[in-house]
Image (cartoon, rainbow, N blue to C red; front, side):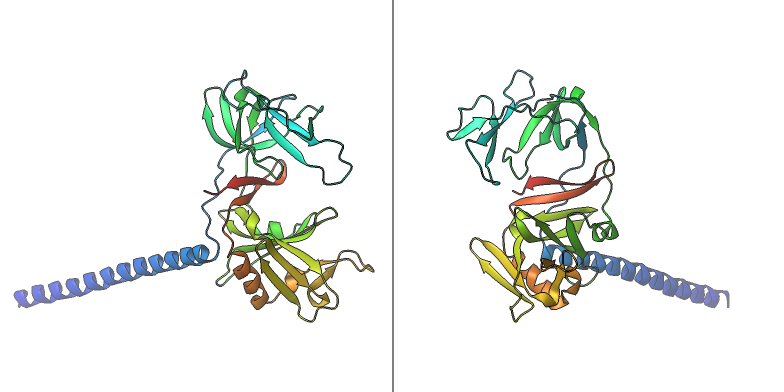
Length: 301
């Protein structure tokens, strides 16, 4: 009798162990599948690395120069402006002070005042930080700045509702679910450059928008289709009609694209067209609580 009870006990233990093992295994497999699915969705839509900048500094002193090397005796960054330019689109060139004068340009007489400017840190060398200085006007990737001339500044994750509430200089929509989850659409307009639509992705609280994905946008009142996309060698353009337009001012005939009116099919068409381009330069938007939303440029390898 005792032997029979022992056998029954061992059988029950074995069954219980099998059930526990199966449950753990199923849970792990489910978690792996969910992780793989989420990763696949992100990678299958916009393939970008994680945000490249982890530390930021702000310039705290006036007349602080940016140096070519980690040495205050090395060449400094200088600005050259297009000579005799009377247009709103005058060209500006940045170069090191040891480079020859640029033909057709004159050296700016203004001091480069970086005080209050935030720079992403790429590394450090002795008493210097190596910082990223790429932007829309400067194609030099990095420079050195003395640690004594800067202070640390904190960044915080960007929230979806924070972006969508932004009204000052862009309209934003973030896709919340499905294949295009975390895709960010931002419509920007200014008097000099007109309107353009940026296509990006929210990664770890940072918005990454490849410059190659920017789409020139414009309103066509008599256009039959709500949106028409032209994908050409020089770039992508999008025209839209009144059905998906938003008046910039009440009672005017000035419009921008209303992202809230775009259907799932239209969003898919926009995103799928944009991601055909290979990312080169990428704008990474961070939230710097002391200064608001800040965008920094990074060159993808």
